[in-house]
Length: 349
Image: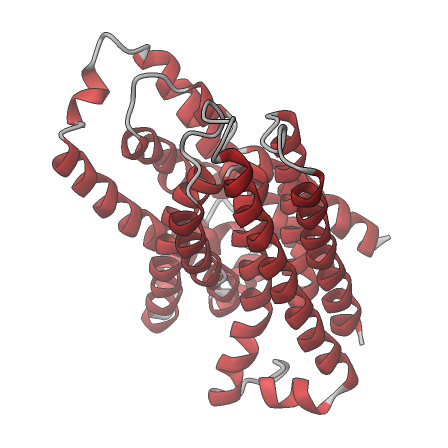
C-alpha cells in the first residue's frame, strides 16, 4: 500500500511539472525573462512558505536553529539547480515540450540517480550508498545500466530532433519558429545535468526534514521545510539572470505596459509557478513512502516526461514530420522509459 501511495503521489507531482509550462503559453506581450521571473517568485518565494506553514507550523524555527553548514550546502545545491531550472525554460522554448522535456529530464534522471552516490564515495555517510558500492552490487550495476540506456535514449531523441529540423527546413516554415536544435541541445544538456542537483539538495537537507518529523510534523510533508532553503538558492540564480536580461533587453517596461494584458499575464505566470512547486510538494509525499533513492527521482522524472509528451502531441509539435522522424522519436522515448524501469528495479535490489 505504501508503494502504491508513493507512485500515486509521484504521478500527481510529475503531471503538475509536465504541465506547468502550458500557462506560460497564454502570456501575451511579455519577454521570456519577464514572465519567467514572475512565475519564479511564486515557485520559489511565495508558495513554498505557504505550503510549509500549512503543514509544518514551526518551520521558521527549524530553519533558524539548523546547522549553518547544512543550510549553506542545501542553498548551494539550490544555486546549481537554479541554473538548470533557468535553462530548462529555454530548452523547452527551442526544442518544444516533448523533445525538450525528454532530453532535459533524461539527463536529469541519469545524473540525479548518480550524483548522491558519487558524493558519498568521497564523504561516506551511514545508510547511504556510494558509487563504489553500486559497482559492487547487482542492483547498483542495474542502476548504472539504466543510466547508460537513458543516455542512449537521449542520443536517439537528439537524432529525432535533427530529423525534425531537416523536415521543417522546407515546406513547414510556419511551424515551430523558435525551434533550434543546436541551441536547444546545448541548453538541454546543461539544464538536465544541473537540474539533477535538486535531488542532492533534498538529500543534504534531510536533517531539516527529520527535525520537522521530531517536532510532530506528518512525515508526508517533512520535505516542505527543506524546499524553502533549496529554493532560496534557485531564486537567487534566476532572479539575477532575469533582472540582467530585463536590463539588457530593456524589458522592464513589460510589468507596466498597459498594451499587454498585465493582470492575465500575472495570473498565468502565477499559475505556472504554483504548478511548478506542486511537483515537489507531491514529490515529498511520494519520497516519504518510497525513500529518496534513485527510484523516487526516476519515477518522478518518468511521469514528467510522459506528461510533457502528451502536451507535445496535443500542441501538434510532431505534426508534419516524416514517419522516420516520428518513429525515431518514439524509440528514444521508449529507451528513456526503459531506463527508468531498470533504475527502479536496480534500486529495489
